[in-house]
Each structure stands twice: as C-alpha cells, then as structure tokens.
Image 1: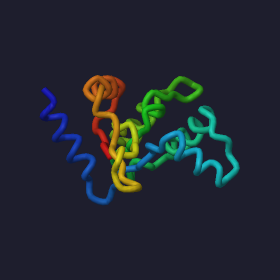
Image 2: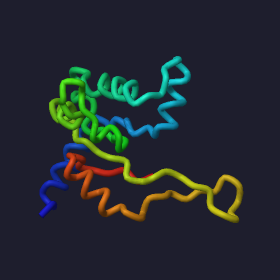
Image 3: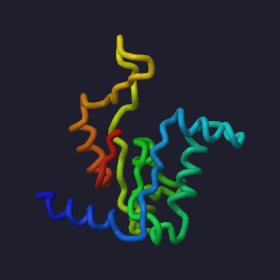
Image 4: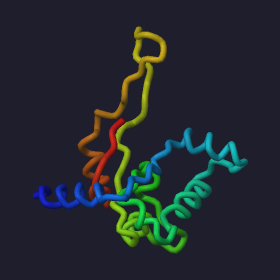
Length: 139
C-alpha cells in the first residue's frame, strides 16, 4: 500500500542541491538555545520560532524535508494553519523524530546511553502518519 509513496518521498527528499531541516529540538535543547538570546522557553515562543522557519518564503528551494519534534507536528499558526500545511506549501516533506531521547545505561561505563522509545513506537508512528509525517528519524 505504501510502496509507491515511500519511493516517491525518498526520491523527493534526496533531491540534488537540497537538504533536510532539523527542527526537532527537544524542549530542553531549544531552551538552551533560547537562553543564549534571552528568550523564555514557552510554548508560544517555540511556536513563533518554528512558524518563522516554516513560513520563510523560498525555504523549499533549499529544503526537501523537515524533521519535527512531536509538539511541532501538531502545531498551528494563530490563524489555524497547520505547520504541516506550511511545509507542504513549500514542497517540504514533513518528518518526525520518533525516539524518546537518551538515558544512561545502568552499570555501564560513564556516559554510556541507550535510546529510549521502542515501546509504543508503532502506535506513535501511525498517529504521526495520520498527522502528515512522511518519514521518521530515530537517533
């Protein structure tokens, strides 16, 4: 059922001269970035920041895909336009980060981590696909 769509999306994402925009910062990571410029890490400020990215005219000339954080995938402008639709208007394929971050491995060497989120992955992926995501990133 999804074979043709998968092939088409892979070809579009791999378009020569274009790249993938990584807009999948976690709440903590985007908070660190906001701290450096004196911006409070609130939902509204994160929405405004990402809306600025996705409403940039001509972004699709350089980006073929955009990896989103879960919050972003379901986000809308104050006018009710979904961020998915903003991306589609620029011919950018929406993607989603599906892992749940890193966690230390018990009794392992210092700094050793494991990627979390395999539990519930199928249900999350189905929800993300229904919301418009067409590719996934797993760390």
